Every structure is written in structure tokens, then in C-alpha cells.
Amino acid sequence: MHRLLINSLILCGTLVIWQTNPIAGQTAMKLSDCVQYAFDKNPQMQIAQLQISDADWQIKENTAIGLPQLSAGISYQYFIQRPGVPASVFQFGPPDPGADTLGDVKIAFTAKHNLTPAISVNQLLFSQSYLTGLKAARFYREYVQHQVLVTKKTIRDQVTDAYLPALLISENLLILDKNIANLEKLLQETTATQEAGFAEQLDVDRLQLSLSSLRTEHDNLSRQKDIVVNALKMAMGMPVRENITLTDDLQRLLPSYADADVTAELNYMNRPEYVQLIKGRELSMLQADLYRKPWMPTVAGFVQYQPGWQGAFASDTKWFFIPSAVAGISVNIPIWDGGATRAKRERALIEVQTIDVQKQQLENAINLELENARKQFLNATARVKSQQSNLELAQRIYNTTQTKYKAGVGSSFELVTAEQQLYSAQQALMQAQYDLLTAKVAVKKALGGE
Image 1 (cartoon, rainbow, N blue to C red):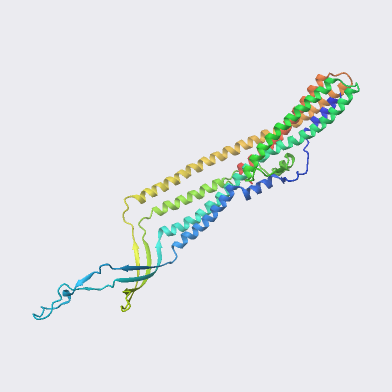
Image 2 (cartoon, helix red, strand yellow; image 1 turned 180 degrees about the horizontal axis):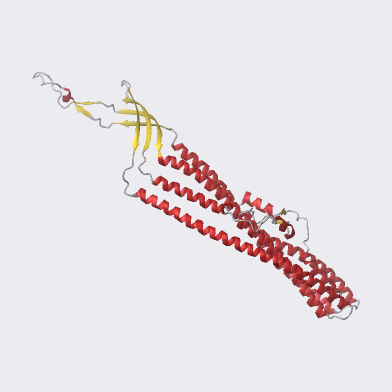
């Protein structure tokens, strides 16, 4: 009798969520805490943020191309053999018969040593590719920014999908801890009663078997929890060696998703991956537009100043200062490149068409995701209502069976059967509530909510 009464109390407590303080050395974390931790520590998020910085510097790099380019240099030349001009070319008229001839004498116009510093300034005046590149760099910055949003959504989904199963196991472990404590106390009382001759050894054996089964189940769940929590830590970017305690529960999380309107109209632009695809298409269109104008000229201006010195390192040799300065404009007009520009343009257009196909494919996938999530929500809602009614019915059946057993008009087999039905109803309701929560999460994900 005692065994049946206590077992009933244990089973009725299955749906109770036990609140405990975090163990010393462990970090108490709600679902929102885990998500925020992942935003700060997850390597994927860190990489996405670095890509934004890279895009900012890429804009500066492209902008710098259109700014004045200042450079300086110096060159030194030593003429092993100086070029020269025969001196006879400087003779005018026929030579005098009695005069000395210059013969093979050559005149050099350069010294053996030449030192030539140079400073130059170049300025891009017009370039269609430069203008398009500036625009593309800004579009790429927006593209990377949306990549961050996609990464955040992916991380949030991964953490949520890992947190909920870990939470369910944690709650089951808390319930098992309470059940084991109650069963250990009951075993002590029943053993004392059996030793006094008021209970059968069979009752003690059944309690020991039940306690052993609960402990085995507790050990199995503990190992499963370690696996699931490690997966949660991986999704968060947390070292596996750190310890965390999950503080949320199903009853608190269900209201937090009450604003998930399953009938809300779908807006693809609420999905960051869809917006990113649109930005990618704009980038490809920019590239295609660039290749549509291959004939556009590139105009640049330049100024160069060269102060040069010529001479020798002998002490009696004079160095000659020979400066020069030049300014000008260069214009480069592409005429024919063998069809390379056309090939690049066609490839860019193919990329645009590919993105259009991917966009349509993504729209279909989002539609399917939302449709399935809505059906899961409706099914889970119906199951919760049904399982609540089943639990109430199972509780009434158990109470009636227990009353009949106490009055001596019912059998222990009927009471055990009623216990099993009550336990099954409690577990079914817990699973239905968990399914309802995951369905709400799925609907919110499909609609692009956070």
C-alpha cells in the first residue's frame, strides 16, 4: 500500500519544474544569455565582423586610387664606355691642307657618373572602371553587413536548437533527482515496515528495482546532457571546459513566443539571407554594366621633376647640375582586346541569371518552411489540448482506482495499470508542450523574426 501511494506522488510530480540555485563555479544562463554570448564569442560572428572592417578598408583602398599619387626615387649610373660623337661632324667646309685633322677623336656629352633623383605626381582624371569600383565597394560593404545579419540569424537558430533539448534533459534530471530522493526515503520506510512484519519482502524488492531503474536512467540522461550541452557550447563559441547551468524552463519560454503570429503575411525582405542575395545581384549588375562600356577612356595627368648631376669623383672634377621637369596628360582608349571584355560581360550576366534562379529557389524554400512550421504549430496546439484532457482523465482514473484499492474492492494490477497510464499522460503532455515551443520557434524563424 505504501509503495503504491508514494509511487503515485512521484508520478504526479513529473510535470513540476524544480527551481534550484546555480552550482558554485557554474554560470547561470537563460536562452537569451546564450544567444548574446554567441554573438560576442562565436568565431563565425567574429569573422563576419572582421569582414566588415575589411570592406571599410577596401572602400578606402579604392578611393585612394583617385587621389594624387606622389612618388620619389633616385638612380645612379656609371658609364663603363661613354657614348660619343666623332669630332669630324662638327667641322664645316673642307679642311685646311696644313691644319691638323681630328681623326678618330670623339666627343662625349655625358660624364662617367650620373646621379638622377626624381619626384613625380600622378593624378587620375577620369576612369569609368574607377567610378564603378567606388560604387561597387560601397555595395560590397552593404553586402557584408547583411552577411553579418545572416550569420547572426544562423547563430541564433543554432543556439536555440541546441538549448531547447538541453533544457528538456536538464528538467528531466531535476525531476529524477526529486523522484530518487522520494523513492530512497520510501525504501527506508518500507524496509523498516517489512522488518516489523507489516509489509512483504516483495514490496521492498519492487522498490529496490524501481530505485535502480531510476538511477540508471539518471546516469544515462546525465551523459546525454553532457553531449547536448557540449553541442550548445560549441554553437555559442564557449570552451567545453566551462560549466553552465540552464535556468530557463518550458513554462517561461512559451509566453516569450506568444507574439509569434502564425497567420502573419510573409515578407521575404525580413529574411537576411534573401536581402543578401538581392545585394549580390546588384553587385553582379554593376560588374556587367562596367563591361558594357569597354571603350571609355582612362585619362591621367602627371608632373615629374628630375634634378640630375653628372661628373666624376676626382677632386679636380666639377659636377654639372642638369635639372629637368615635365608635365603632361595621358589618354588610354581600349580599341580591341580580342573579345575578352565581351566574355567578362557575358559571365557577369550569367552570374545575374544564376542569382535570379537562386532567389526563386530560396523563395520556394521559405514558403515551404513557413507552411510546415504553421502545420507543426497547429498540430502541437491540438496535441497540448488533447494531452491536457487525457492527463485530467488519467488522474481521475487513478484516484478512483486508488480509492477502490484502499477499500479492498480493487486489485493491485488495476492500480499499477492506472499508475502507468498516468505516467504516460504526464510524459505525453510534457512532450506536447515541448513540441509547441519548438513549433512557435520555427514559425518565428520562417517569418524572419528574432
